[in-house]
Image: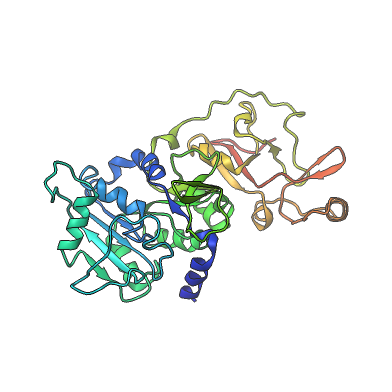
Amino acid sequence: MGNKKLDKAKKNKVDEFYTQLSDIEAELIHYKGHFEGKVVFCNCDDPYESNFFKYFAINFNHLKLKKLIATCFVGSPITGNQLSLFEIETLNDEIVDPRMPYKIEITEVSDLNEDGAIDLVDVEILLKNKKNTLTLLKGTGDFRSEECVELLKESDIVVTNPPFSLFREYIQQLIEFDKRFIVIGNKNAITYKDVFSKIQQNQIWTGYRGFSGGMWFYVPDDYLEFDKTVDGKKLKNVPSIWFTNLDHSKRHETITLFRKFNHLDYPKYENYDAIDISKTIDIPFDYDGFMGVPISFIDKYNPDQFKLIGLGISSSGLEIGVRPYTIEHKRFRKEIQKRAAVDGDLYLIRDGEVDVPYARIIIQKAGKKNEN
């Protein structure tokens, strides 16, 4: 079943996004102190295509890594097409099919060409001259395969851009094996019940990069849906963010609250005892009850300042006490507004009409009780 899911994900164009080196550099600079003496595993990355591998190979000594491991799955869709670092010619004196799954393990990077700098040229020489550095995998390279799980057990920190459609499984595996990680996922993953519960339990949080806008990814040449072309390469903007369980300074910043509560600007939901807030910046300083905020709040979330009560959507909403639609309001929503009416979704009544805001997270100031 697992291989069928991975095959489906690989065929699904929405999973074929390749991270720019500039985005990797901008995020990972905030975690430098975490990498010293660690084994880093990029387990969704063709080593010859991946900018994650490129980043860690170039910065191997600067970060004082113990080892770098990278694996790819069978049939990597852009092998040899867009992001190649150098050519694969031999492996143990045999011709290698570049679409076969393999792994690369590096324990040192030195100035092999003696040009006074350590760069990808040195990594290329290293790989071509140390036969045990690059080896074929026996399986498919699926991150859930026995081989990749054994490599995961050996690793300390996982850094990659996993298939978005397998994000739940991917994160769950990292949690089960108690691994540190910095990975990219869709913003809406915050609303997945199993992902949100881990955010609530402080098992994962968002990275340093801001929530606004999306991330620009390279896509394969045959990709029909793209937003722009730069230097002959297709790019697409995707609503994505970093997820991690490594600490960083932004996570401890306090949101400055300066808005004063009033009933006109902060209406209550019709089906839950909480006020609606459309922007994080509008959280009032003098309100101690439950508040519904947009999912972008997680970008500013400081667990010492606020606590997460739950999600105000669908079954997650029902679990925290969001009341189902009344018969009248459900009929109005479906027949008049021609919109979905899902029990568990928060809604307000504005000017006599049902108003359902986009996904809300229910929060409360830390140390307070809901007495409003």
